[in-house]
Image (tube, rainbow, N blue to C red; front, side):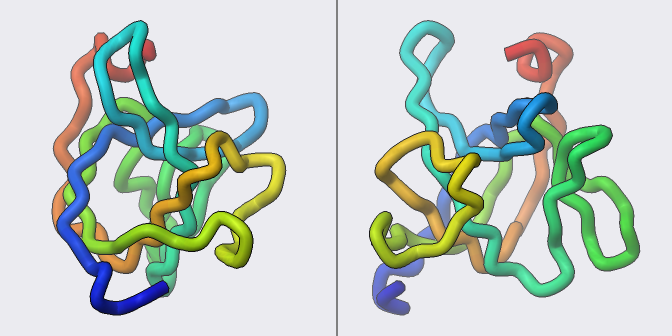
Length: 111
């Protein structure tokens, strides 16, 4: 990824508990665009049960429906590694830092 492509990204975290996949979502219900994601943050991993992002102290700090403010940029879909079964689009966001987690509402978590 070109470091010059770094940007502030604000997006809703989406996911599927059956597959253990997380992605980013933009848009409104009925017109949601999913974006594949590569988490490039030391110590941050995807937790499957319950589904969400876990920090190095094994604390779940973000889950589907939450809004995230992050830094990162676009990755090349052909060369940016992601879990292949989790690729939900040809677009890949490479996330280097999560600046803020804004908890989702009960409605956001149902999507």
